[in-house]
Image 1 (tube, helix red, strand yellow):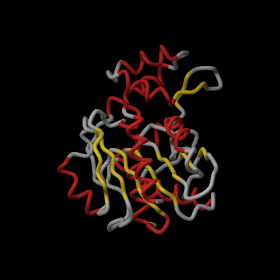
Image 2 (cartoon, rainbow, N blue to C red):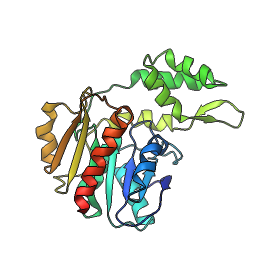
Image 3 (tube, one colour):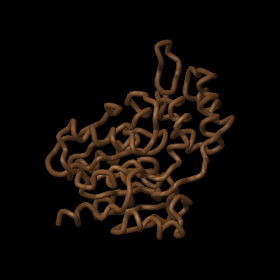
Image 4 (cartoon, one colour):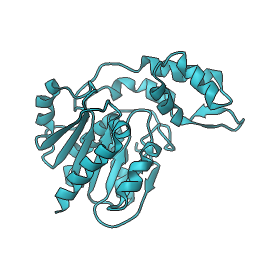
Length: 260
């Protein structure tokens, strides 16, 4: 059963660009990029199920999340779109492209390969559970609770984007943490669908990230044979936040070449 996703739509004409965040992210994380991209095209940033302002629901498989996204396209009357996905969101857009390639004008995949990954978020989940139990009154208290398990300040700041005031005025998580943790094994899996997506693809990877090593490229090209792979040398996994101007420039050049 699909979830009616929350989204932010810039409006405009032409084939839209749909932007899909990664694990524990949201459409809000992409505001500065959307502001720039919407000058040239219609941009729709989505919250996946159990993220942002979208409803909470059991099931985090890539087939289910791709169906949610397809249902949103149907609801908005979008026949075809350019799809940009970071990390988990990259697997969602690859899944949609494999399942319904006729709905996809192009793919932009940010720092993820179409493969299964190992577990790596135990400290993050422990920090978020600690924050839940602690019921902080302010962001300083929230950061201290996260810091008991998550050492990197940049990661804590990212996780804190999921906080909002509850009915009692305390800071609480808006994500469906129970559903995400239960579905974590599904999130680590390869994208849904079968075969290859033969349309145009840009894969952007961080030079300091381990998510898309050279060893993953042969398997990546089996799924995305038309992929142009570009490395942003001074970026890690959150390459769109670490190298925003370079990231935007690569996306703009890719999309402009398609419409030329």
